Image 1 (cartoon, one colour):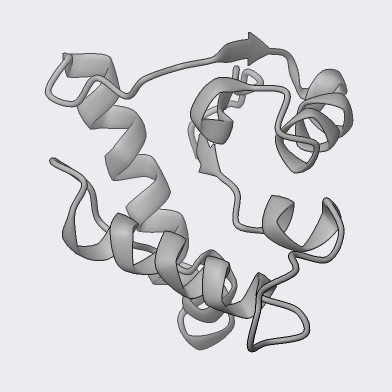
Image 2: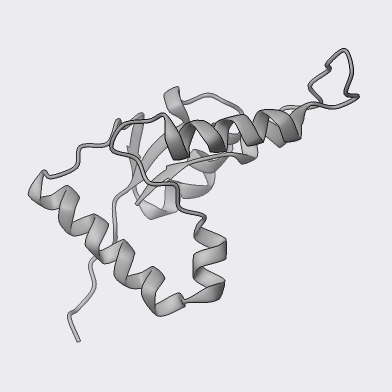
Length: 114
């Protein structure tokens, strides 16, 4: 699971700008634009939109990403690795900007194949 957060833009307080009272929406739009068009080997993926529109496709995409990482086809920049019970702490670190690039990897739990 690879996470890069936009929520940090909103949780770190108001961004003051000369014309706009709060520039957080502008900053979020910039970050989204950067992820969509300027970062190499990156696909912008709004997980909530995709999950709500097509949950089965969402699950399939996740499995495929795990497969690509396992094969070494994609090599994401990783700031931290942690087990599932540490996810809340990693999420808080991303929101507070305490991880480079806001990228963390959660080690998946063992599941049986059905």
